[in-house]
Image (cartoon, rainbow, N blue to C red):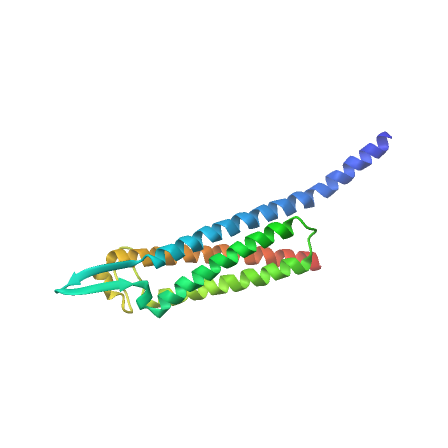
Length: 186
């Protein structure tokens, strides 16, 4: 009877590390997805509320994100990225309670890769409009307006930075998903 108990404890100990690893992996994925939701939501909120009106040489000038197709694309990419993040959070939570299946990790890999590419495209489009420097100074594109609408330019640059952070989070999620799908298939 004692031997059976010792064998049972030994079997539990050998099965525990993979279970702990899976729970740690699931917790990490959920945390990264929550952070991605927060960063894409913040980036979307900042770009949608970025506007400033000033008078320059007696002429009323208005700067809004909606005047640039690149900023519109950036805003839409972040909205979709946020929605995809919520969807993937729900899927990761549901799939985390089931037995690991290589197909699920592969599908999450594809989802994360597409979301990362979308966020990267949005960031690249918004950055290509014109580089806004640390203090709102302009370096190219139409951004010489930053001399006059610095509040607008700061909000846009902060929004772009938040979106880049979300894209990096999705890069991490893509690597995790790719690694898990590779391990389970082999």
